[in-house]
Length: 94
Image 1: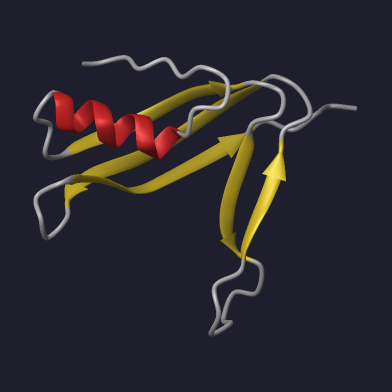
Image 2: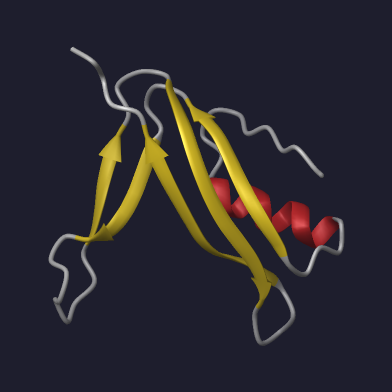
């Protein structure tokens, strides 16, 4: 098991892919634990069956617990690629 801590402004998939390259990790399952105020979540299509890709963004307004799962698999050049990260963010009770 490995733990990676990101600092403000770092991009999740870039840090995971760099770590995987440095440690010769070719496949993995990823678990997430939390996010700070100002973190940006990029989620799926605005319109589910649209021909053009239009991702939605959500900026967190406070610190949040996050549960998430993702995977790493190699691309055609054998570089590790974070292929899918599915976060679930708790809602504000107010």
